[in-house]
Image (cartoon, rainbow, N blue to C red; front, side):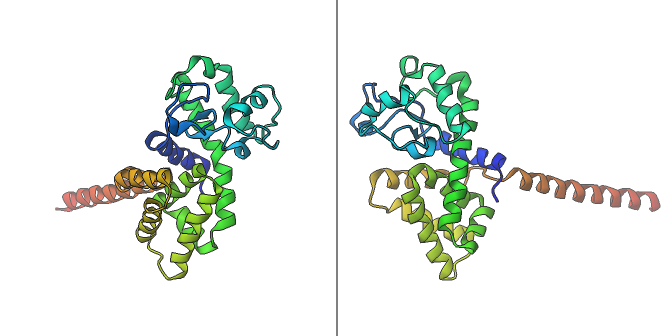
Length: 243
C-alpha cells in the first residue's frame, strides 16, 4: 500500500512539473481552455465533477455549471474535496486570482488537499484495473507510482488504458520496473491525443533524474551507511588499540 505521506510527495511533483495554477471560465482564456471549468492544480471542477461531488452534474457546459456550484446544489463527496474547493471559494478566487496563480500562502495547504482528493481514487483505480502482481510492482516502484498517480488526473478511462498496457507487459513476462516504465511512458507519448502525448514527452524529460524516493527508503539508506561507518570506525579503533 502507498502511504499518504509518500503520495503527497508524488502529487507535489505532479503539480509542480505538469499541472498549473488557477483558471476560471469567466477569464479571457486561450481557445485550448474553452472546455475547462474552474481549475486549480489541474483539478477541474467541471470535468472532474465526480471526484468532488456525490450529486450528479447538472450544468452541460463549464460556464452553465457555475450556477449550481456556487448556489450549493452539489453535495461534496469527501471532507477533503469540500475543504479544497471551499478554501478557494473563501479566497474569492474567481474575483481575486489571475490565470496561473498558485495560491500564494494557501499553496502548501491546497497541495496537500489536492493530494488527499486524488489518493482514494488512485487506490480505487489500482484495485479495479491492475492484476495483483502488476499492482505490487507499481506500488514498490517510485516511477511507476508517479506515472499512475498522474493518470488519475487524466481520468479513470486513461488510467484503465495505461493499466491494461502494463498488465499485458507483466503477463508477457516483463517484470523489470525500468522496462515497464518505458513501456507505459512510450504508450503515453504515442497516444493519439495531443494533451496526453505532450504530457508523456514532458515526463520523459525529468522522470529519470528527479528524486521520487519514498521517505522510509531514505531512512534505511542513511541507517545502512551510518551502521557501516560505525563498524569501520570501531574496527579502526580496535586495530589502533592493539597495534
